[in-house]
Image (cartoon, rainbow, N blue to C red; front, side):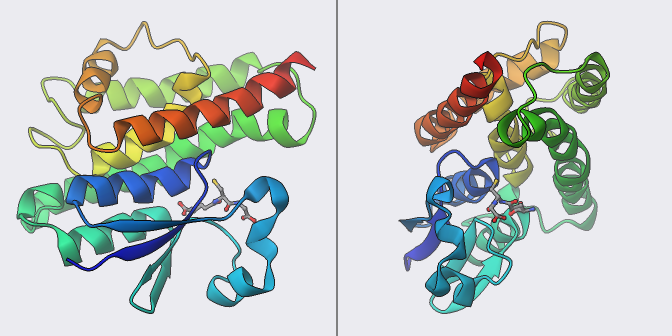
Length: 216
Ligand SMILES: N[C@@H](CCC(=O)N[C@@H](CS)C(=O)NCC(=O)O)C(=O)O
């Protein structure tokens, strides 16, 4: 299997979505660090590859792709050894896609509304309504997991690696999930995912940045 290049920064949840998908699929990855704290995403060479200047970006033998969930789908399609990680069955795939869109349009949006103001705007406490909003999304995720080991059913898919990478930062930050028993069980399953340790370190890095600003 050929090696793909992934432009990456460990603290970025989006970057870890692409990495965890690659680890689950088993495709070898050459990581190219783009240090967001040094604004390396604006360098001339990176802007040539990705004028949207975000990470992650995949370079598969000259084929350039960004948007983490699109990268996860592409890697699974091209390098997946069997159908289970991103099912070919239309309905099963639709459920995986639904979870991926839920992550990008709901979970991630609500998490960002919590941590962006802390990291970038000097906000030092989390408003109650934002907590409630995010917990309402976690309650939906908990429902998806009712009677299921994984977010899209009985088998692990790229929806699991995606949602796990997305949530890891805020979980490392200490978000209370005691009222979501299905999420707690799923997280135990996720501890066996390939790339778990790399993801954990990146999530810790993110959580430290949030904590630092909260203390100010
Ligand atoms: N929807 C995109 C989000 C990518 C994104 O916003 N990445 C952030 C880091 S988490 C970034 O690169 N920010 C720097 C920038 O946009 O200049 C994805 O999932 O790939």
